[in-house]
Length: 124
Image 1 (cartoon, rainbow, N blue to C red):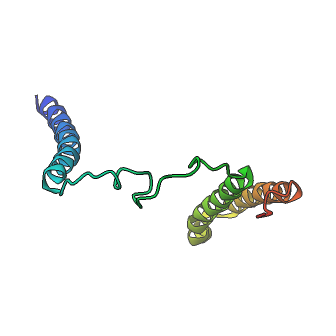
Image 2 (tube, rainbow, N blue to C red):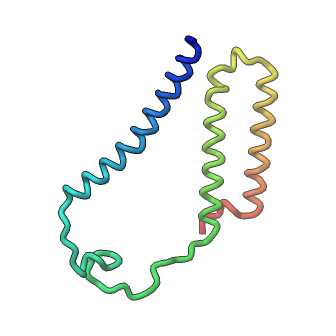
Image 3 (tube, helix red, strand yellow):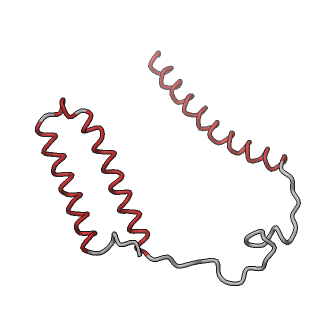
């Protein structure tokens, strides 16, 4: 009987947090809607709220290289996230962890050399 109560208590906690996660944002947005000043005028409804009419399409095409450059940055940023805990616990891990990390770093270097050859790291 105690285990049944324990399970029901766990579900009750999940339901309470789920309801709070729904009620708090909805309540804050609703309260903000009632408290904010509301004065719509035509100038405020323009695209940039500057009073000037937009003169061309606001969508701009970006070079895909910027996106790939950002992805490369994220990949090497994640590498440091993996390297730091390994470096902190290196004394306890032993030679097997050293070999695993060398394989990981070599794979990243191969990826870096490949990106360099494909001129992905060129910013222009």
